[in-house]
Length: 555
Image (cartoon, rainbow, N blue to C red):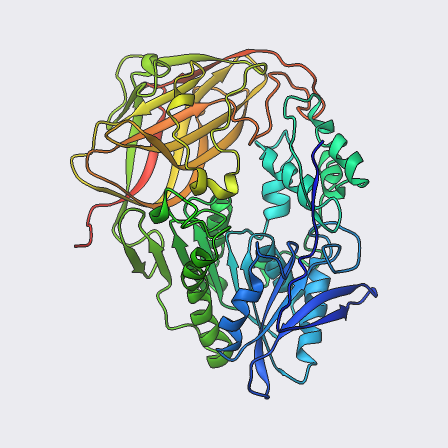
């Protein structure tokens, strides 16, 4: 097999690398970028597993933005990755390692004793771990496109408790099988799936402990000192991307903390129409000229909007010591403008409920059935076959860079095992701003079923693009007890002449773990069994889509 090893980049950076020793003797490779002024400064810490000097994380490019503003910028390879010592296992030591690193910072002659933390995805998790550690020097965090429960809640979901993202296992296998990162192809037709990475692990000469823990149902115990939400008492700037595959979890964090009286006033939200890799809706289609992953000029253009809100936040929290004088909520309304509000959903948002109707036409091509303001009065239902030997193919190959691909959903919507329900064209703009959910009356001939739901924007030319999605495991579903599927949140303008479409299926492979149609563990199953699935859509057993909409539009 073709195996590419990505080790530490030999980048020359204006930073001193220090091996910071933590409590068990392990040393963590740490770059320290100092401001020119020789005095004590607040520090901003980033702890990441993707090479602190690599082009992918672009930390050396961010450093001047911090140091020119009077911050010491501290970037560390986490335990077991790249230049740091220790075993390569995610999550389990981040609380202690975060505490010890902050403690080390406060003892340096350039430190004024205050620390903030910043970063995306896994290096958002390391911020929450530091919060859980309780170190008093930590004064503010800016977790971006992440979740405090990313390990246990998103990637480590057990197969019989939800619909696990298979890209989570793929992430473990490529990023946590040793100190480097490994790139290689995966044969997703391999059964059982538990052995899908064995050939790669043999070529690497090591296994991803995290993947084996997941298969063995061994919890990561990411917060041995207690969950950070129970103790957080510092300002938090939640940075969310509407098209990020982690967005539902990011918004769960924000909503949960806003619902706690003691912590509510410390929560700030900024949401952009971006995906996990910071591609922006307004830049689609992504071309070599605007691809910041490969084009240095595009990266330099991206950094100010990527970093600006965090710098503003740190200026208030690390220097002023008071809540930032910025709006509590700021967001980009996709295909519209930047907005601000004191709360989310914004004042004036209301629920718009659309009912699935004409269900018998739901698998008759992309337009399918209807999304209507009222359910059908007569009984209406759609039946389809979930065939584990012919799973619905995923339309995107890299869900983290969704907007770089931004696939048209129409081809998959032609399938007879994919149901669609579509509105009439909008006679005016419709602004979505808030949570999205579906409530579906379902049945299956199997013991359980996976349900995958996508909300899509259908342009006048028929091109169809996903806005947000959700999935759920339904056990012995009963039409009298509908299944709720959360699709996260969005801020998006459905433009005049466009239509909304709800897509429903029983698989999305290989982004999500397959359902074998039996009660067998899908990681160890070698064959499957076809099931007939049914969705009911009538006044007696309604299925519906719930949207948050704004009737008043700026300008």
